[in-house]
Amino acid sequence: GNLRQLETLDIRGTSIVMLPQTIIKLQKLQHLHAGFPTKGNYLCTRHLLHTYGFNQLDACTSLCCGAATPCIMMDKDYGGVVLPGGARKLKSLHTIRGVHVAYGDAVIQEIGRLSGLRKLGVMGINEKNDVKFCSAISNLSRLESLSVQSDKGCLDDITLPPKNLRSLKLEGRLGVLPVWIKKLQNLVKLKLSFTTSSQV
Image (spheres, rainbow, N blue to C red):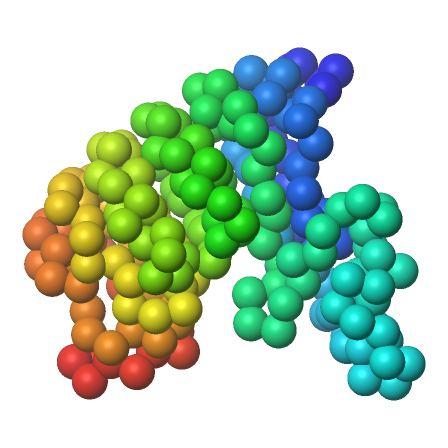
């Protein structure tokens, strides 16, 4: 919280699953890169689970977390970081990568109020939070790059897609492409991963 001049925070490749509340003091922060822990940490967690009979929480607590910190290192979407409340105050943010949004709608609302965002990468979109996420995306008019990991094709409710979007990455069980993609006149890059779309 004392790094008031910090502009870039990169915690990729670490076991950090929750950012501290003090991050909202970093008013000059422009780029936040998070998530995707190293393969070694992930394999060690799996080793504890299968070899020693640890449950998910105990394994994560032993390796990477304090006893009071919940674990988000799941099979499919491990590696996302949870933003604290008040993240909407980080008005200088241009980039957010690797944020997990499946553990409460508050973080989605916080992201939706960061009107200066140009690059956003999230995971944990599901049928319970997809409508609110789509609403938040519609507020981000300056967004140029969007990366979404979802449980299913949950992005149909975006009514006003960011008109400046140039890069779109969709990961998950996507049955069909969202209809709003055809409105993206500036799109130059589309990447689909682990999808089941019959359109491609």
